[in-house]
Amino acid sequence: MNLRHWKFGRPFPACLLAAAALASGCASVPDAEDMRGLRAEKSGARVAELSDKAASTNGAAYLSGDLRLADALERANAMNLSLRRARQEREIARGRIQASYSSALPSLDLTGNYLRLDRELGSTRDGVYSVTRFQDQYSAGLDLAQPLFNGRIGPALRAGKLYRLWAETGIRQAEEDVRYEVVRAYYAAVLSAHLLEVNLASLRTAERQVTDTKARRKQGMASNYDELRAEVEVSNFRAKVLQARNDKDVAETALFRLIGASPESDVELVDSIPLVIEDIEFEDALRIALERRADLAGAEYALRLQRESVAEALSKYWPELSGFASQAWSNPDPHESSRNEWGDEWRAGLRASLPLFDGLARRGALIQERARLRQQEIALRDTEDKAISQVRQLVLSLKTAAEFANSQSRNLETAKEALRLVETGLKEGQNTPVEVMDARQALTTASANYYQSLFDHAVTRVSLQKAMGLLSTGALPSGPVLKADEDAGAGK
Image (tube, rainbow, N blue to C red; front, top):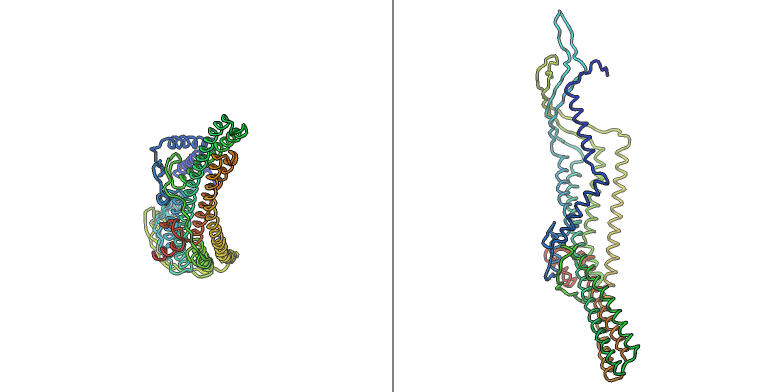
């Protein structure tokens, strides 16, 4: 460029403004130290929020009083952050559907242009100077384009609707995942409360045993070993109580996080762990699972979406036809370039194109999309196989869990009776304090195993409901599995 002809006019300040905007944008990006400071401010606010029982941010309110499983599920459905994030897929799908209309709807653009040339050109004739090219040139216009035919319109519109349906299956699966986690966390918290009660009861009994053993030792009816053995048992139960109390706090904290409640909440879990014995055949469970599971429906929609992607890749081999119209205003006059005045002109026409060779880009894209289609076909079959295997395992596990729960119920009664007998025998001089402690330890273990068996059975049954696609909104896990299927069918 010849610097002698360059005039620092209007374009130069624009360059300065662009450079200043770029520099300010770079300066506004926080570095690692700034980010630590930012997170420090937010961490202080969150800690203060947690210490305030009346605070409520994003629904994470302090809860107190009775808490039923149905209330926990309802609150999780509204407040769980994972669900709230998953439901944003609805907005994404709505935007994708609207974007798909661009393949068929017209486009209208407002354009503007300013051009400054290095110098003005002209000529002199008969002593009169005439400008043939002005140094400053301006233009503005409206451009309208309407697609008339191309192969992308159909696939794009169908893909938008399929994406919305695919997104809904993802949301339903996320809801079922959250409901399962809430049910499991609720039952885990109930189990931890039971285990704490069992260990507290054993500790109280052991402490009474220590007092009784000391009294018996003074009377010469117990040995020093009996007293030491009783004190060791008290110490062991105190350790178990501490562990059980910690497990209860951890379980409740996990539940509070899932339902969007403050971790400082103090609630009473009202519902117990149910034991619903139901004979479920594998064929019935599998039929329902293959029909209702959200991941299978999502895999079907993903397969159909990929078919539309293949169709769109094929459309690049098709001709395209579109109509266009434009209205332009420019200075100099578009019809007479020597006039330094505004003028206008319009244009309209048809535009057709047929791609002949694009360096194998279309062919490469088509190969990729067809390979992805085969991937989706394999993924659908793989998802079905996983569903079959999961349902089979859970049906078998549920039967085993039911048998184990029944056996532990009988074992608990046996342990209670054994403790009663040795305590009676101790009073009559037929049993020793050590035998009483052994029976009490057996009862504690039997009680823990009983509540654990209830928890395992309930969680296995809820897992089966989830594997069958029946853990949807409104279904409580305490009802029979097949009855939930009938209710879901009636609600169609």
